[in-house]
Image (cartoon, rainbow over all chains, first blue to last red; front, side):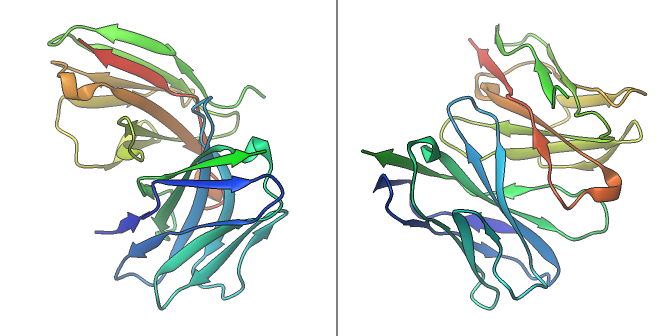
Length: 116
Length: 114
């Protein structure tokens, strides 16, 4: 079974600063995908960034980037130039590459507060 | 495109009752997954439907059942409600042909069991 661990229940960052959210996972499989989802107070999960395990290059989406360390099973999210709208719960998630839609396994989340 | 829509948004039920939650997937999506998110926790996978059949199931009792209709919409049924079933229930849709790109989530149904 796969597990995802987020060890930071809460984080705070000032506007325009950079913050890094941590995530580790455990799996015996070699082919999988990792995601970071954002859940604002509206409750709707929104995909932030996606990483394919067989790609060594770290994914980047505008202000969001990841540090993917496959051997260490680590997948951290860096948010640059933080904005007030980034305030939300952030969930790290894992899915196996089975060739078909597969379940997402989520961590317990990190609550990020962006302050003025 | 309305995205993934869920109904109702909020629901209060009494212990022992039965409840049905509904989900309409994003246009063009054929796969629907259901998740339970307890307060302060990450979502937990309940089951997934594709071609009107349950394809995968998480560690949930048989009190949790579902259905997918020919138009790909889906229902989640929970029988004999327990206080512990109080949670946010999320529906996610994706396409079988492009499953690994993104799963789109609805805003969820907040179920409170009293």
